Structures are given as structure tokens and as C-alpha cells.
Image (cartoon, rainbow, N blue to C red):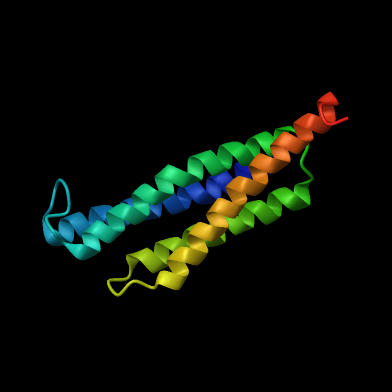
Length: 132
């Protein structure tokens, strides 16, 4: 299961992002919300954005893998997803936001979701004769 490998790597990144939020909450003594602390707000959004996009991307990767997508393409998509999420996290985490990293990260993440979705649809169509 190639998707399991990338899910494991991304789970580690999720935990790191979680600990960054916890550290910022401790630093600014904020239990709920952000109390207007920009760096805490940014850490929260990086973590939340990850939680919003990565599970769906992994589900689509799994479905593409289960449908028979070639391993090389799964690795390309998995690596792209990791690079995209790291780029997004770096860009958004900066107080002086690095917009190019944020945009690049989101573009890669969306590309992975789109490519895995199209692959799943095409593989289904080929397997069932729907396109013929």
C-alpha cells in the first residue's frame, strides 16, 4: 500500500503542526481562539488547512491505488502532496507571509486532488467499459 506510506508521513507532519499550535498557545497563554495573536492565528490556520485538505487527498490517492493506478504515479502524487503541504505550512506560518509558498502549496495540493480524482474516474470507466 503506497498510500499508507504517504499517510504515515503526513500524519507525522499533522502531529508536528499540532504541537506548533500547542506551543504558540502556551507562549501567548491562550486556551481558546487566538486572542489576536497573529502567529497563533497563522499556526491554527496552517493546522486547520492541513486537516481540511489532506484527508480528502489521501482518500482519493487510496481510491486511485485501489483502482489500479501505477505505483510511479502514486509516488509522484504522494511526493507532490507532501511538498505542497510543507510549502503551504511554511508560507502561511511567516508573520510576513510568503505568498508564493502558500500559493504553490495550495496549487500542488489541489493538483493532487484533481489528478487522483481524474485517475479514479478514468480507471473506473476503463474497468467497467463505461467509456467504450
